[in-house]
Length: 111
Ligand SMILES: [Zn+2]
Ligand SMILES: [Zn+2]
Image 1 (cartoon, protein in one colour):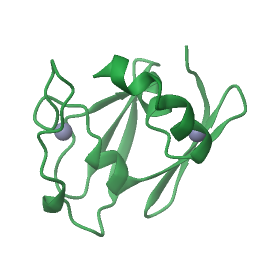
Image 2: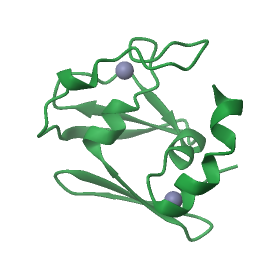
Image 3: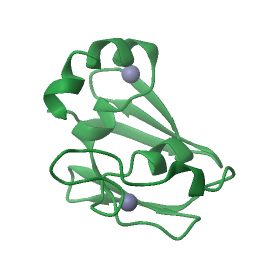
Image 4: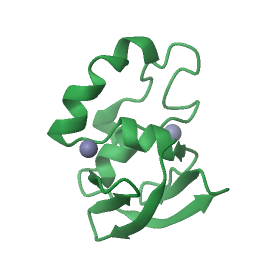
């Protein structure tokens, strides 16, 4: 169970401090690329449908909100905001080197 103790953001990045002390930094463009909604990702295979080249390079986030204490939702500056990012999912896509090497084992199970 992943829990968040603090969320911060600046123009380009979201910063999450996890309750276990881990810190994650996500560029909003990265979050947008990994949007888990049904328009961007196939619900069954988990495969990306989204064409990432259509995402503006200077993408920012206008608003973020907590969904039912288990997820975050973002209103991106390109007008998209359908994705519900569960804390678990956010932790899984944490781009830091530590998590990237850990999750390479899980990736296939997830797909
Ligand atoms: Zn989406
Ligand atoms: Zn990490």
